[in-house]
Image 1 (spheres, rainbow, N blue to C red):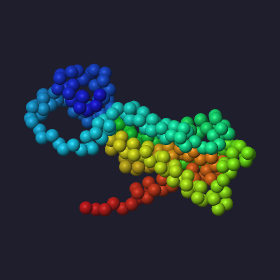
Image 2: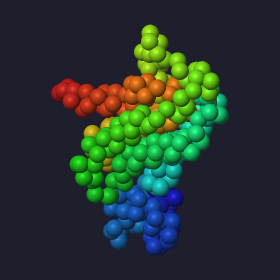
Image 3: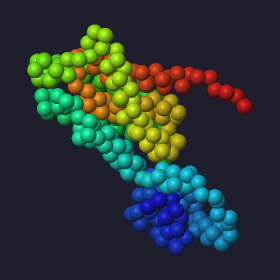
Image 4: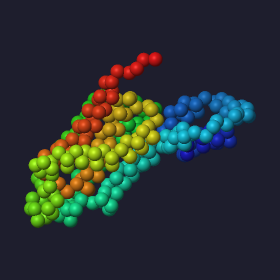
Length: 265
């Protein structure tokens, strides 16, 4: 049930205690504040009796409908987007040494990156009627995103034998930086859909710094899901620069945007 459905229900005189209506009122601060007065029904009926000029079609209408979805639904969309990033890479663009990579280790790392991305998304998609998160959560979020990826870089090589797959031992010497930069670009590309979806689902009730840095950390972690399933290199230095470097780089970009002086007027 969305905002328009609640309005129609009030016009029809339905009880606000109905489970679907009550659930929406818990999620939507605007509808909750409007429904607190006894005169809301008559006011809506009087307003609906006045002919209004329909606004021209615009994207904002559809966007408002998406943002009015219940928070669990919005989070489910984000989780689905992260899983889709992983599925595309696992099925269409898999790392060539996937058969040699320990399955349990792969599952645990993907789960860690995805869980951290979802945690970042929860902060960004906080319902507007809930108290603002503690300011200390933001640096903790950034630290988690960076430390999770750095910690994965210091794990022992997934396989240390060249015969397991020759491509896993590329990216050395003159080939180091092209491969590392390539992974930074690849991870960013596959993380961007998560950032775009977060922007579409954000109701604007989250502080700007949390929305920006939280979105970028979620982007970096989703990008690391893609990299883990696509990149065959097993050297820790490549992982530190090309994979763990992604949340560091995007955090620096976010800080630069936050510290940028705003134009007046």
